[in-house]
Length: 196
Image (tube, rainbow, N blue to C red; front, side, top):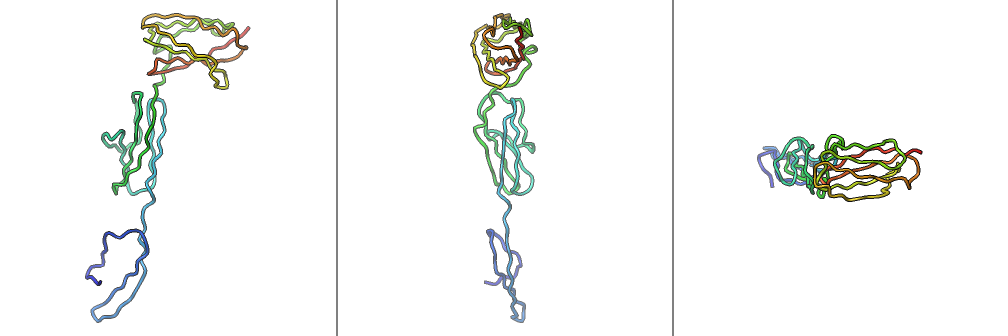
């Protein structure tokens, strides 16, 4: 059907044939291709206690929200508490994409600052004294070799305050090890050197 306007609305992507007719009844035909924007794509990664989301495709500027919270122009979310998160990106047309099950497990800290950790002697022959001046309620220590393999894990319940314990690595070969400590909310690491 002919219309007086040259504007057409609600068309999906595709190729259309348009026929124009002047006042004398002369007609001409042409093809019009209506495209659609690239699909909105969202990627998101957890970094420490934050999430960084990047959107592409879609139309116009993006808005980001975390767990259906308020929207923001930035895809960066920082200082998050441990838990599961979903990031949603929305474009100027209202199209949305989401990434869920983003697990923020803990915040990275410097153990000497967070808990007052001192390790002595370091380097040592394998028997290391760990002292925490501001020990957490619960503490897990994990020892990794230089390749990142977990060698041992021990749970403690210091109940706060000052806490000391011995870490015995005398059965391990000389080398560099990583001691990771966590209270379940935050974690930090210290390099240990075992020499004879």
